[in-house]
Length: 312
Image (cartoon, rainbow, N blue to C red):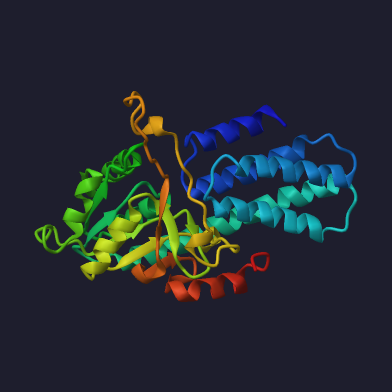
């Protein structure tokens, strides 16, 4: 295992590389490096090394099905190949990674276009955490000369919302940051009636086959408040984040982070619960902003199976 693979693992683990798409791209890059550096001369040993290095990178964080899907796609292509020549198999890995990356890039452009069309003149959009896809959608809407404003959480305990705020202010998009505990206040039409939030747009890290999703902890509360107040909830994401093994949310494991992220010098004996994500049921979601358009949760799995043959 090379130093580059170990560095990628650590960068994913410590969230230097963050966001489901970026993690997936990092895993693909790592497997590509593993293949190029491999010194094994036989196909079985080479394939085993690719599987082991891939699984090592995947173990850096739970709840990353898009990263799992790039891993599965590469192994799917290796299994399809009849070649026993390691140099040919290295090319299979390289081509598979580059092809997957090209799909991600094309999908992202479609998602941005679909998302920016959802944003209307004068909209007040609420978002949570940091999603590169959501940022691109908002950037696209801004470039389309639409006037709108954004409200967003700071996103404790690692403050990913600060990154969102920096991105939006750099783009000269009107933005208001609130503490996490004030989010429902703004979304509610009772306490937050003067803000009049029009829609919630967030990213996601994982999708189950029933159309439910997993996103940064706090997402359920935001989606539930929006649902109660008849405010549409949109999930901006690649459908490649779907977990084919997860029929519903019960099957998706939630990553538990280090308690020190919440309170580095907490009183001795205090227990701290620090989940990275929570689960948003399909019934709270208005639609997925994805490469297929704006898709209802119940229809997403069917479209994924049809489009991506290795996911079934």
